[in-house]
Image 1 (cartoon, rainbow, N blue to C red):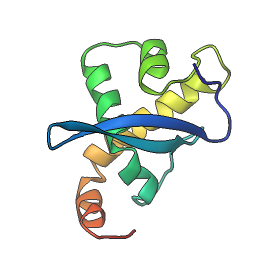
Image 2 (tube, rainbow, N blue to C red):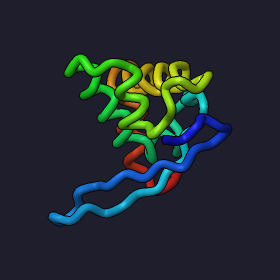
Image 3 (cartoon, rainbow, N blue to C red):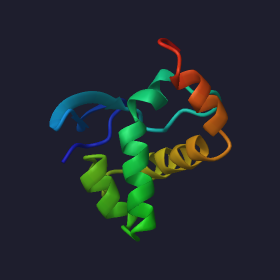
Image 4 (tube, one colour):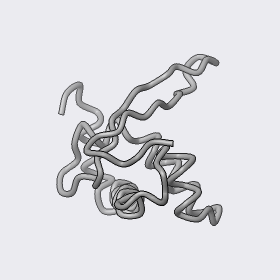
Length: 108
């Protein structure tokens, strides 16, 4: 389990061509706000997992520990989880048109 710091490295695996390809990303203590960013692009797997966990009724502590690899008892962990969940909701809601446009470009 990782204690929340300024940026926490996280490892995900994307299924590509029948294989799991490891992806390394950094987790900010609070998700960004405003326009879609490269951070959002690199955290799409986390956003999807957080939304799936919420739909399945997974509690914030479990989601924080398993999906974000953070210690839920650490100060700031709940805020980190909540801000990333809110960002996931925004990306799939009001920010969807912008996200589709921006993610279609090679660089942000």
